[in-house]
Length: 349
Image (cartoon, rainbow, N blue to C red; front, top):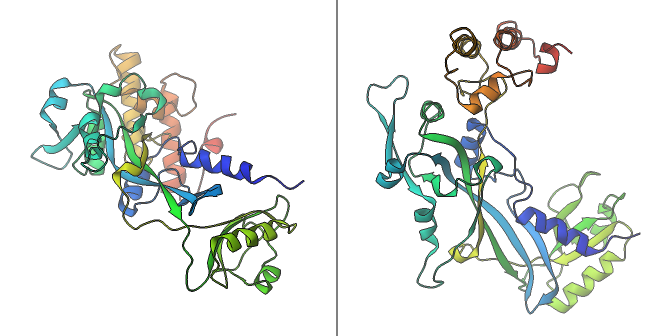
């Protein structure tokens, strides 16, 4: 049975609300996202959601993400008040100074003369719930050594990637060169590209059996009523579950278009307690020293909760000398011997 277009719309709603965000990122992944401007969720840059029936000339919305900066949970009220802190970074003689804003200060950017106060919801990682007043946005770029220093600083309880989420209404405009459409393939079918092209549909790329949604163009420029009629005719085909016009948005995003702000927590690779996104002999040394501190010396392990989780490679909720041994084995296999090995091959069954 042909699925209703509302099912597609519901899926788009999930995407646009950030429900499909990545659950955690490493520092390297987050840094790459910030440098390229890509979305933290790994979804497409623009998420299409139809407005059906059309509301005047409004035919759809586009949701998209703008990764902004790193965020931290700051447990030092003096740091939040001053808006600046210093960490000692390996390889530097002088402190590394980092500026930050409280979340309240950060959200002030959305107060404009045109729109007044806009107060977007902030969606935090589960582990950060209850610490909303301590969440701050770093306004200074940080390097990997600075991140490692923050991880080991008791003033901070977590680091994450802050992302602004926007949604804009797209307006249908009759173009001079054709009509833009959004198509979704029927479940169990692939688009019949040759047949669609024979009917005047133009595709930018060759479609594959895995292509489930596609943005394409009809050869003629049509008024909206005729574009909707074309979509209804396309939906009568057995290979197409959904067809609807695509509208246009302006190049500039108004601040009022923000829907919410999210923070994706940063995590450590299993076996990487020093947080450099590599598993090395130094990680085994850190794990062994933590074991000696906690078990032999009966003192604090010296590791944060995030680091302890990274050290516990067999996930038995215990810090043992075996954890350090397995980390060393992983390093020897993958780096010294050059034999690609995952944890399932290292750890005993």
